[in-house]
Image 1 (tube, rainbow, N blue to C red):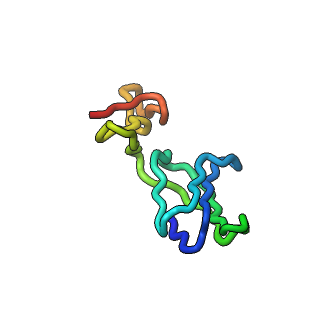
Image 2: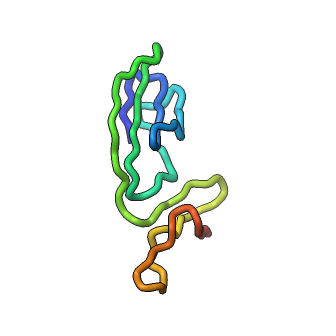
Length: 98
């Protein structure tokens, strides 16, 4: 997801709060379990804690794949239409896995 090259840590923020920190990431760091249609901001820091890159991105789509140890094909059912006149399930409420 992010090319970090000489970075020593990566921080992912939602609404100004750190939700994930990766210390000494590889050249590419994958961040899982992000909610669709949400804008995330990030900072990539060098070994002196100086910001070397920052930005934001918005996730797309409606199906939210989840990664859990020992569970394959887990999904958040948020975003799917209900039978109640076009309403949708909220994210983080109903899950399924196999």
